[in-house]
Amino acid sequence: MNKALPKRKLGETDLEISLPALGAAPIADLYEIIDEERAVGTLVSAIHQGVNLIDTSPLYGMGLSELRVGAALRHTPEYEVMISSKVGRVTDPFTPPSDRQVFAGGLNHSVTYDYSYDGVMRSIEQSLLRLGRDKIDLVLVHDLDQWTHGDAFSELYEIAMNGAVVALKSLREQGTIRAFGAGLNDADAAEKFSRDCSPDAILLAGRYSLLEQPALDSFLPLAKELGIGVILGGVFNSGILATGAIKGARYDYAEAPAEIIERVRRIESVCERHQVPLRRAAVQFAIAHPAVSSLILGAAREEEVSMQIEDVKASIPEEIWSELKELGLINSQAPTPVHDY
Image 1 (cartoon, one colour):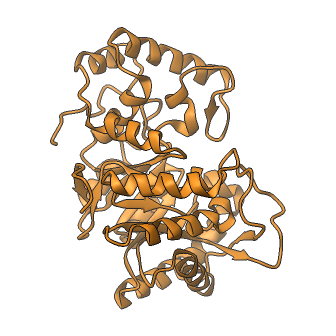
Image 2 (cartoon, one colour):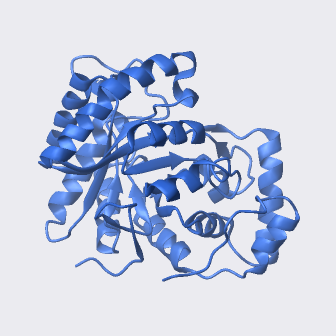
């Protein structure tokens, strides 16, 4: 049995997800090369500490993340671990990647967009082989938003509605997957997807955090109303809410602009007055919304996992939230933490 961690139900599914869940992008050479022993050790440590959901994707390290997650599962066969992966991209082992994006290494396989029915079936098959499993608990249509695709979004969205969504509903009915949804970087796209195809869950990255809350007014209330489970990713906005307003801090996968640095500096000063680490405040704020089932927190070291679990469990002085609201640094209507665990 995993150690006890707080868990929440994912929407109206039968999935009970730990707080936190683990994001497996960092162990796939995100920003830096991570050796195999350290990567698998990080995953195994998370499982031993009670994390019961690992989130991965074919994109992460061009398939390397799923391979390493599969290795960690083989090291922990006695634990019940759920896997979330994604579709919308397929890998080609015969063609090297033309752009590794934010991954310093990874497999020498290209990854291309494909939201069609056949593309999703091929993607699922590839993921099952890399993971060494015959089922995936949660599958998300990856990056189906304007933030990613710009002017091509509308065309790709239609392809996904007639292809990816149909395929995933069929796989859910067959029992190959337990739940489906989308993994997005845009709150408006999350709302559109939720209205159009009744998903089980949405993984929304970066759009509800201590730094910004565009999902607060419309998407999160809709998800609560429809019984859609919400998992938040990117609660550090690619790093700056973990590192603080330091030189070279990252925001949305790039160096943070001056106005973001200044806003984080102001938030950080409030946290310091109340003797609360900035990253802890960021985690606690994201957990507080009643629509949120879990957080995906990435880690590339065992000690990072332990620190994140400590951040989830810690109590924070209520005064910090009232001060942040009074200063206009968080939305005045945003729910703030009341521990239920």
